[in-house]
Image (cartoon, rainbow, N blue to C red):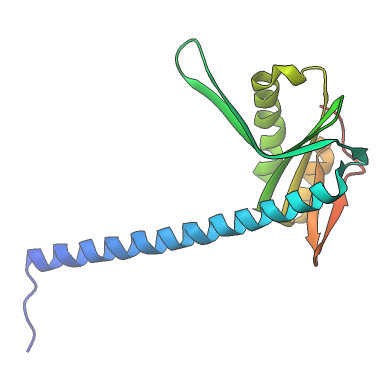
Length: 170
């Protein structure tokens, strides 16, 4: 025996579908966050062990390096960097991605560098080196990083392979 659906029945089904979609989105977001956390921990531990990036030895390493500045118009300018290494005259800004994209490379130069320079004026005289650590690297990402002078780190088994011959100072 088939029951006629009422408007209330249809709205209830739509509400249930919406709830299920939100739950799937929450679970997928959690998985993505976990993947990102794993990648950050992996590259941080590797760099902490060697304290070296692009052939340069660093004295200190920090994760979750961030600062916010309130502008005169009351807006906020803020930036967060996954890994920052420094010594007496150099800074390495390392962004970590589970899977690096072409846009991630461009963001390093177009947004990360200006934000770092603006928000951390105490490092104005330091040489700035850029890097991206990624568990997955596509050839076009490597080519763009090479063109812009950004070093790369990639997982190879349980080791990290550095691609930094082309790193330049910003």
